[in-house]
Image 1 (spheres, rainbow, N blue to C red):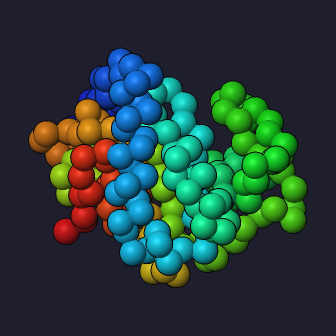
Image 2: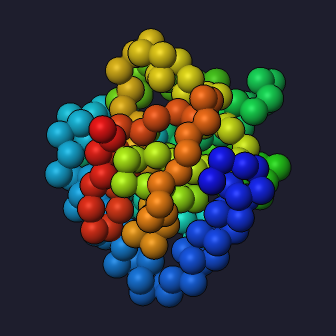
Length: 198
């Protein structure tokens, strides 16, 4: 599972699996996901959280976002960095945020300097993924945006928690071999279970 070919094959397989879920299954899954998030102490205590807007069959964070707003938390979304190639910025996301499609066609908040939230302020980051294993290893889309952006967290520069989020059908039975640049997750949260890194 360590060659690029095999990782790419895995990505195709698990993207297809999550895209096969019905709208009803997706809605049910996202509601169960919220229940798990609400049970996590770090989420309860968080002031700043980062979520994402689901694309390509990803599990929706909408219930979590709405719950966080209701609790007075500040919700951020990832935005492609305009100058640092391959990096992300995190911007405040409001109910009335002006949204723009990035170069991948994914909606993100319009870039306003006043909405940028520095990474050290963020308590919990919920990261999308393509596949994961029982040891909380994450396989992303292959662009490396989260890995590059979150490298300071991995080097213990600050205490941001990083949780992968996925459907149960995205679990790889045999494990995922991590590369040296892969950012470790503290947890992987699915509709049925929370996987904690060893």
